[in-house]
Length: 404
Ligand code: ASP
Ligand code: MG
Image (tube, rainbow, N blue to C red; front, side, top):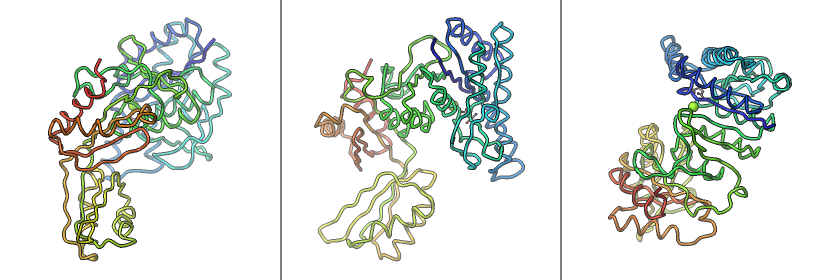
């Protein structure tokens, strides 16, 4: 008998009708003999609604009471789902995070799971009950309610699967799997049957928003097989697993697009030790995350230093840079928000040379100028003018034979 953890996201439990549809799916799997833990999100829009209420009282809300508030969304859906299961003759029991004893650290609003005591859950499973668990929440050592950060129900599901040594963790959502690229941009984008944790992590951090990144990290660490499937149509979905479970890795698994970044350049700084830290130190101190970094030294011995930040941090970073420019007597500071980052991701890259040059040639053939380049073991990213975003993605998708 296998133990399956299923997780249903906000849209899948967005109305009572949809909760009843979930109950039907769970009933079918349970009837086939699976031991089932079902993790649910709040109804779609509910967490935002609650956040909105809090913000009416205080613009900047955080801390303990926010978690007390936000955790209520999931308490509604666990109760309704357990009722819908009972109404179908399926014995079920709902659990809040605290009732499972999903023990977290004390970091309200972004807590991390430390330990799960699944004793009660196991007893219910042994008694043939479906266990319905509230996603996104836990308790700290003192019993305070904590939440795991937006999208945290995915992490709850993976953590439950790891703690109970489940056979699979199935994430039911509004898409039917992980795609080679965004199907809204490339119409013949293909659903991937399998993808490695590493590839999924790269794709998720690059903007493929299918799963909370932390849940994939968790799955990778505890070797939980993770499957992304549609709540609304049948299909095998995409299995996210270890590399050894994938017979032949594709050269490239996906192409991603990120339009959330902006570029800043400080021109004509002295080329001497300590310059990079003089420039980026204050940026880091302001809690601004830097992604790509490029430094060029010109013939005159002065250097140009370019980096990208999230667009939301652009103005703040620009202000810091202007101040530093004064101190360093730099020639100028330039900023550009109209950029896009396009990346190709694939574990196959490790064993094949020449992917980068193929990528650059394909873009050049379309007259797309590359402004910045960065690489990791399984990823190559370029920054291009925003107006070439879609053309660039389509070009690379075709170049690497990803179409369905
Ligand atoms: N309800 C929470 C959110 O909207 C957690 C989740 O859905 O995963 O972020
Ligand atoms: Mg979600």
